[in-house]
Length: 122
Image (cartoon, rainbow, N blue to C red; front, side, top):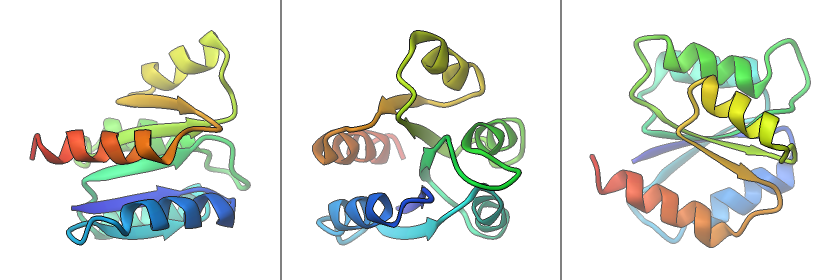
């Protein structure tokens, strides 16, 4: 299963890469901004994406989410990861097409469980 981790924070990307390294059938690809994420999505089949909302540049996580869910790549399962935890933020993320929304900080075990649940549907 191909997992795309998109976050401008290298520590967050490293945490998720290490979390998923416990599963030998998980291939983790990383991007540090929305533009890089879109390039990866267009060139590789991504099964699940863990996507930060607030990133530098013109394309944030909500833009990436909306693009994916309104395109030919819409089968990609998207988990938004954000420090924004207000009800309105969560509702907006889900309205943009996210399949799940986790607020930071989160448990790596929850992230792993979400990936495993999604994998069981493939």
